[in-house]
Amino acid sequence: MVAVSFVCLGNICRSPTAEAVFADLVDRVGLADQVTVDSAGTAGWHVGDPPDARAVAEADRRGIAMRSRGRHFGATDLATFDYVLAMDRKNFAVIDQMRGPRAAHVAMLREFARTNPGRFDVPDPYYGDDDGFVEVFDLVDDACRGFLDHLVDVGVVRVGAGVVW
Ligand code: 4NP
Image 1: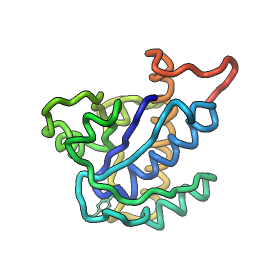
Image 2: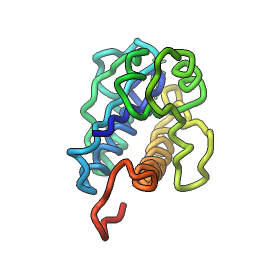
Image 3: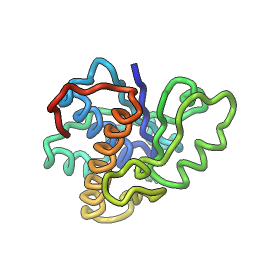
């Protein structure tokens, strides 16, 4: 089993989008019994809350259902998860400070992007307009495909011959 957690600030916009997109991808390529997918926020403001309606609407438009509830990221998550993928540099820095006996691979999601990979932020869409949620979905979708490429490349998961994503 490989456990992946996506982390943003509030856990109602970016990381739940990544959770839903990656879970859908994992399911479509037949890895649902090998990969668990989660998300969390470095702030605790939205614990128990459903995702932001604008994120839900954009995901719905792309055929993806979002069912997560807000969860606060904690230091113990670094022992629980194999991969902790931060949405932006601020979230990365918060996670990085929770050092201790950390077992997880900690990275920024866009390091795995197929298009223009690097230590770039998935921009926080919360105080912006609907276009921000379209951009978030596009960035997350591309990077989730690239992250699955990575898991296959390093031999963490194996996908059946001829399966594309
Ligand atoms: P997220 O977006 O980190 O992508 O979930 C935000 C959600 C809520 C807030 C900020 C960012 N907030 O200030 O409540």
